[in-house]
Length: 215
Image 1 (cartoon, rainbow, N blue to C red):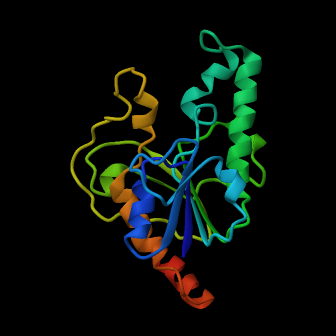
Image 2 (cartoon, helix red, strand yellow):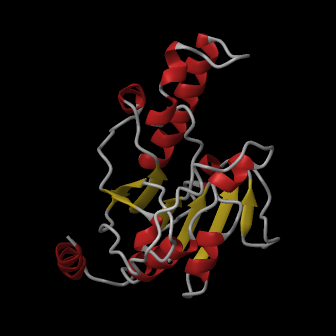
């Protein structure tokens, strides 16, 4: 499959699909952290019409969409105005809408739980298909993540482990905190590549059976 991993600079998801023989490319405003030549530096919305079979949105900017930040809409943080908060919310919702309504057969968007103001701004909004935790995929920590899925079955946990440390949430302040918080978990990336990458070449009937078994 031709796979686009949008909003990813680390290459974690790209490498998982590439290792399984897929034509996988990451895209982000930042250059590839691993120096790969299979990375597009720029706005992923500019390449959505380039014939992809699968769109993975690894971690779109979510500060204004997620439940944890809804308080800033009514009481802006220092240095921000209510108008700026609203503009950032609308931009975040527009980005999510572009990915969710992309002309690509199979789509997965990863994001935290959304607040109702964000949902109201997203075109053709649907609830997330599932939520997962890193400890279901070999990482002994907690960080609830929701997946919005189109034409993809929910992920099946692969390696449930002990440990419920909220490492990401407890990261100390610093200039690179946002970058570390957005870093994807390799165990989840491997599960995506194994389970969703194997859908390539299945007939519609086989896909229906696969999704029923996964449910």
